[in-house]
Image 1 (cartoon, rainbow, N blue to C red):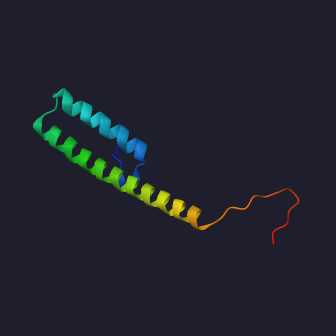
Image 2 (cartoon, rainbow, N blue to C red):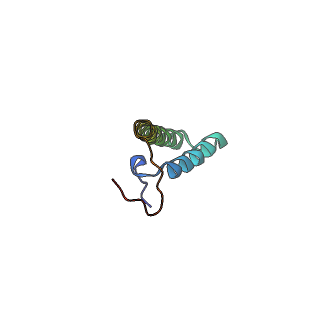
Length: 82
């Protein structure tokens, strides 16, 4: 099974894979080569996750900014737009 690129994974999947890698590394049963490959993959997953979190934070900031600049008007049934 081919491994997905971290940037193509959703945040939750990347986090789950990262947790699995940490568990394997902490168990200490991997060879040095396997450990280095797992560590490298973990770094890729962390970077992709940080990027997704940053994008989400920017999106929230935009939404909050839009909310502060626009006044919401209560809608009453039967009321027509002006």
